[in-house]
Image (tube, rainbow, N blue to C red; front, side, top):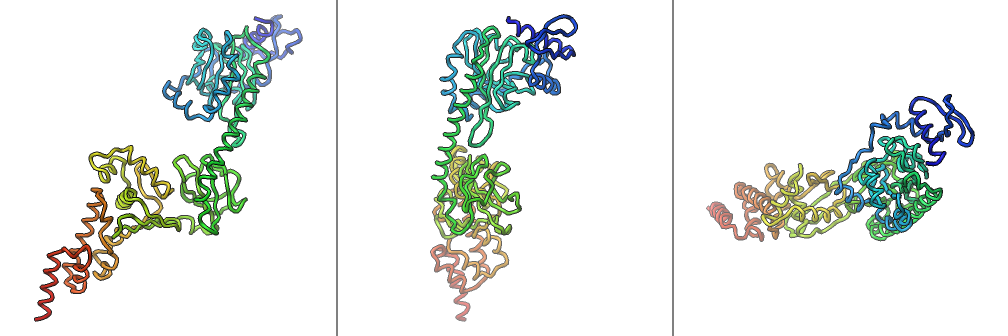
Length: 482
């Protein structure tokens, strides 16, 4: 142990015992006992104070291992740093292979995701919970390379006794936060840790250089992804001629605005489907273009025009004709079935319920979820989930006709009935709705005793084989002749 480490150890003991050593590191001094101590850096002192306020104890606390192995593996796959981990490993691999050395990469909260190093050092580090899934934020571990670098937002070196936790004082840590230069968000930290006797003055510059290289790669990949999103979705965003519009990423960055400057460079809150209001009071409408974003945004000075209901025509048609946000879509046969079922069940349907209604015994919920993802590309924010349901108001010709059967004139009802609901559909749920509506309308026609209505019914494609209706019409005609 070198002299500086010994003096830092004494300073730590005195500080935690309540003394306030402030002797410069290069000058002799004492705390009254004649012992030489090193000056505790202000950043370390402040970090110790923050740890105390959070209730961390230097001898009784350990960083919690919050994430099980399968969760860690899942986070690794999904984390932004997964794409640059090979680069970090290539830059710091030599350090990880040296005796007594470890390399950590954490997420933005301080959870350790990747831990590399020789086996004996990793076994030693496990005693301090320096393992994947452990949370090394300052709130839970006090002063450490990862936690304090994230707290300060800059590269930081923690010499052995400067650690707040006693179990970590045998290590020296050099860490640097990693930010995405495009979004400005901190996505994690990289750390080189070694046994105190192996401490190297070049560790911090090496870690800093690795972090900057990772940031450059993250920025380039983000710019490439942004450009791909613009190419894929821009036509959808600007299809409404004369309407102000924008393309916004899932994290709220404005990728395109027409006209330019209509929105802030970054949406101030996490984007969500449906109506919203700009900080200046103007109203906008967010429409999700893919399950994980981005969003199309239309904005207007008229709050009454920010939310539109969808209108569906399915009577006498094999495929639903849907009008939404001023644009008409002819849906596929399967999506037509799903739309009708959702419209008929305003409280929503679970995936299992949709399987029974639309697919029958051979259906699977995973198929429903896949089809709903595709249907969402058309419905946007109008499609809710958990359970699946239509949001923001939905109008359908079959629902309106069913609601008016009791009171509307029979002639008007026939005018609004070009044919049965999705006549080619084999969905059990749609067939039940179709049969019920057809039966109720037929009963209305038969009970009304109107010759013109009966004539229209029996001469229509959907009523020509109705024997009872022909008999009733014939009897009415015979009565008129008498």
